[in-house]
Amino acid sequence: MELETIRLKDCDQNFIKDVIEAGGKKAHLCFQCGTCTAGCPTVYAMDYTPRQIMRMVNLGMKEQVLKSGTIWLCASCFTCQTRCPRGVEITSVMGALKSIAIKEGIEVADKKGPVFHNSFIEVAMDHGRLSEPILLLKFVGRTEGSIPGAVKSLIKEASLGMELAKRGKMAFLPHKIRKPKQLKIICENIRKMEEEVQ
Image 1: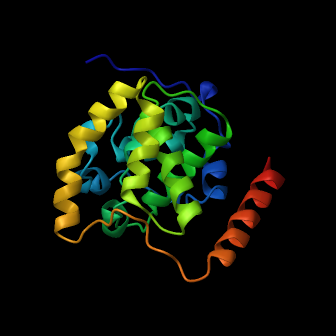
Image 2: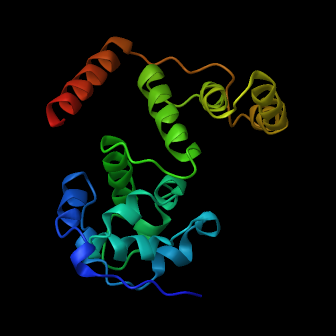
């Protein structure tokens, strides 16, 4: 295993402040116990563990963190956050990192993470809650290079979808919310706030 030398002159001293301002509360309190990594259900697929990401954030390793696949693989299950002995809101840190990466137009090696994130946000904004079938259609349509590829992916996931629907864990049509006009107002306000920040 080759070790990489970290040069502080190459680190962004303001990165931790940017992460905290973007919603990554208490990111500076991490003392590297590793509890977040030990409990993470998706750590096996990550290029850096949650503990490593937290350390990199605190060191100011902005470029490496924002290009990492880890921030897109976070399942937002809150296991790390509820177990953290320092009360670091790690899930919020991961969300803040996603926001910063999107805002700065960071290119990542595996584009599926950002595509899934953006598709998820669109579905939630359009319907007021998640609709798995619509999310899957949006995601597959954007990640597969061809119609046959998209159809193949959808067929592959169909048996799982049928099983979830049969057990009452997923509906084929999105649930209706009571006050869709209020959702539109909220979404408009969010867009205005995003424009003001940029």
